[in-house]
Image (cartoon, rainbow, N blue to C red; front, side):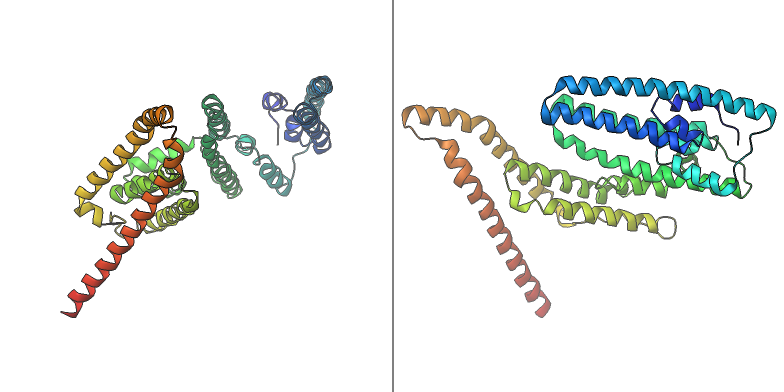
Length: 356
């Protein structure tokens, strides 16, 4: 198979990748492994040892290795072009081609490039690098490490890219014509046909409620999304670290429920049944809960700091210490006890109605 020299040069900007594209595995290990070791050594010297001079020397050697890698790649491309012109260059077998494409697919988009699907491969490459860099940028800009949780989308995209490359390779081996179009065009085709993409729904299922909403289950998805986000907010606000186990429970329930709804879609009717019907018929309690939550937040962020300064100055009493140590714990305990009594009384009423 003839290699694209321009693509080889572009990949050669990352040490070793250009040689891997040209099937020079020894040079790939030499340049790629050497560059990785020098970078890790420079980072170790900077972070752990604080030896910046040694780190700069390591980075200088990395630049030298990068230049040698690029020069060697240009010479290799010229030699292979001469062999192709004289007929000495032979194509690889199907087995080696399959192994080579699968190996390239480790980096999103490269396997598609090898198959000639430039637009499809570019979509995966830009999506992975763009999403990853944007999430890291936002996390650094806002100094909120919690944004890094969205990096979980990268392995999802990587797995989808890998199996899509294998699927395209199998189509080529069957003699089918490969169509170079982006994955977004695939989703658009499903939308025009009035169908939902099960693959896209499964990807959206990673975030609680999003997959349900995509399938048209608005009430079910909204309840799961609100439950997930509200649980994180309230547990952080009330400092209830003992109840953090509720967050993964909600996530796993939402994820597998979305997968079940996706499997049913197209085979049977999917009903938008809310998880909890009680709140639908008793919206007054939702209003009471929102008013209570707003009052608590106002007390915590506005009233308490003012009263704390006043009592500390006049009576030498620190209300904030008493508040965080006793008040929050007492409120949560009373809510749990009240909820338990409500369930007990509800069970007695149901039993009485059943006996009648």
